[in-house]
Image (cartoon, rainbow, N blue to C red; front, side, top):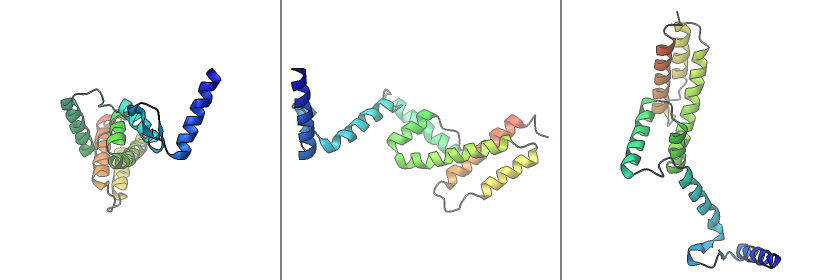
Length: 159
């Protein structure tokens, strides 16, 4: 009996794939084979979306805070990056680049021994930003934020 069911399922799935038919018998299960992957991605994204259990006001507050952080060049959390990846892939790509550049500047500043060296690293990083870069505003804000935070933390240590 079990072998018959498995054979039936294999046959129906392969038949559906080759004939571009749909899966399932129930109306809610009639999903074209070509869309199964897309539907699976939507389900996973809805589970991973940090705003999935929020009210509309909470979602609005979350996105408002996210845009404020982007504008001020602050470090984004994993949840914020995940939200962008799911809801705004273009902005996600931009912010992924900015966050990498931000981290690189942070790392370079940590190796500085004096205030002057730190200032030189910051100025060099700012001067290397391409004027045609679509993320110029966000990158400059991130660099300013990193340098400001660094000078606050390291003011006691640097001479």
